[in-house]
Image 1 (cartoon, helix red, strand yellow):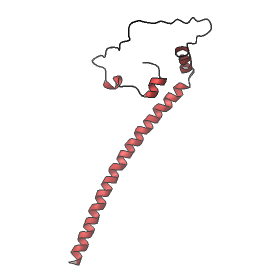
Image 2: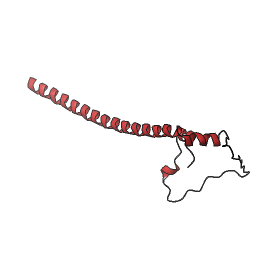
Image 3: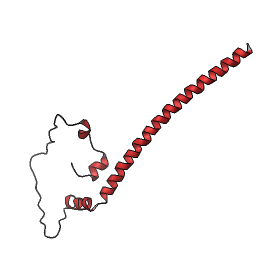
Image 4: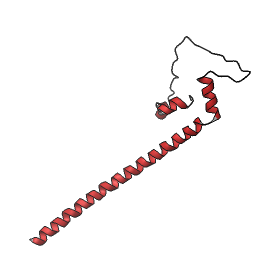
Length: 112
């Protein structure tokens, strides 16, 4: 009787450990996926940071936002009374191309 109880206990403990091991493996795989996604986001943010430090971006902001011009250039402001309408979406265009941009992309990247 005592041997059956001992075997039952060890069997129960082994099954519990196997379930815990399986759950930990699943959690580890999910964390590795999360790490890979965060590393990709880091690369994107570093690319944006590098672009924000370029002369082309700084000149674009100076022209668009501040209205500055180079010596010898003339500033021309064009206004329209018609409201802006979004460009039509072509049938073959992928959903990710129509997805909203992230807030930093809206602020810092030029319109595509």
